[in-house]
Image 1: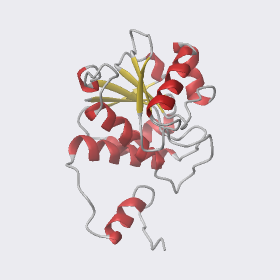
Image 2 (image 1 turned 30 degrees about the horizontal axis):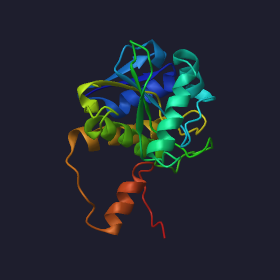
Image 3 (image 1 turned 180 degrees about the vertical axis):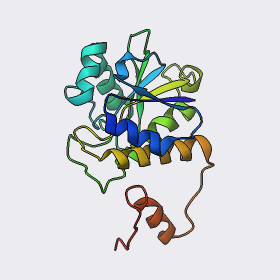
Length: 207
């Protein structure tokens, strides 16, 4: 799987370069994500498929408002009306240049996330796992149709996650899904430290 990270923002580009340098199959693209030719584009959406604000509004205007209708129908029919943070869904865009969109919510509803959140990690991980292990409505493996995925800076818009924290969490998701084998933490202490290191270099007791 090839990953393209797209941003017009200098600070976000610098954060990605620092965090993702040396990762195989991850490239940085300066400019609009909609200018790319790729198999799938990721939407850092909300849990209910509304695409009328932020980056999602640009997607709706680019691909057409039927995209929102298709996504909301998939969420209703296959996720009981709510696509949770940590889940992802794929819909066709009707566009030959970018044929699929992956909705991977970074928030349940539009809201401030700030620094102490792990939602960019959860959303990025969900999108990657869907491509690697998921299936299209036809039953065909998504991985057979999607080999290049373009990501925006997850959670940095409405959620205002700082660029460095977004980059750190996305990099960890790329590592965990694409490079590492699945594993379980061996203790609550390890799980807590791993969790906190997604947004800080100084873990503490959370309880």
